[in-house]
Image (cartoon, rainbow, N blue to C red; front, side, top):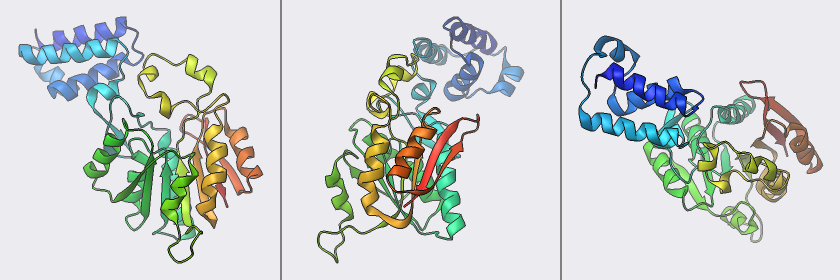
Length: 291
């Protein structure tokens, strides 16, 4: 089978399986598995593809047709210009989450603090924690993650990107985790840090029942945010606010319909200058507040 014939077969398979962006996915599979981009296809479309390579491509295409996310099949995905390993058991980094990282970076630039201490809750792949550390090399960054399935990806991505991020394993709703920030000079007190950032689970129970087949492959632990999707916002804003400095930043990613509700939670918890920011599609995506 020629390269062109294999491309057409793959794209037709994905199209028939109703893969939304089938042409983009076909391009990604060809470039990742065969090292063939569009230019290669144009120049060498008549070349025969070795059978083992064609078999690997077909196996990947069948996985995609069954609903397995493209990112899991490829094994890596880009976030803020860097590669992150992904796979079963960890949430896939999304472009909208880059807005969260951008707003944190903008905040510290505006206040002239280039060596803040930051805690990234529900870290998953570590894309936020790693990005903040790489963009602010003098920062101290902690990544908190509960999932044993996600943890290997977090560790691998920290190493892959050569980022000095400190890992804390545990449930962000467990107050005992705050002991990691105990003040050595003041028994019973916590030392204060500059920022809490989180992309927590925020889907409602109803939304969990209506997930697309691709998203159903991602871990429920990283998606389900309680009956109304707001469980983690309530908990984090109060519990983790204990270790946040006066003037410190709390920054959340939110679902596109949650802007008003999360803003109210932060304001009722005593945060000031609470602001809702939109993503690249014009939807509410990030809420920040100052303690």
